[in-house]
Length: 172
Image (cartoon, rainbow, N blue to C red; front, side, top):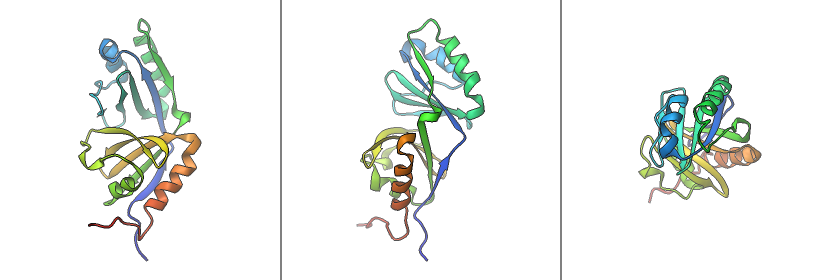
């Protein structure tokens, strides 16, 4: 029996906080409360258990252990109390998948119209998987894909089908 191109697994224990603010003006306050440097355009900063991803010129996504969301949410709201900002727990709105294995990139290349081969190790891409909006970043063993929870089953099926044995891309 042929082996799948990658292992697909859904992550259940991550929390996510959306931060919308003037990043130039509020960057130091965000960094202090989040415990991570504000990343550059299309980048992710990380300390292992937390990741802070650049989503747009005025938006960041903080990914952290679910158990730390409430405390971090309060710290961010306090740090940004004098700024025009939005800090929102979006953990229940998102679905997270890991795509791991030697051909993880090939699985995503079938679904996403973005050049993952040029994405740096600390890169983050907002793109789509088929017709579904998503964000993608690298991990040591592959990639992480975040999408809306309302389409989690669809995303899981897309990823599983793209990773199925015998579906590798023609190397030509």
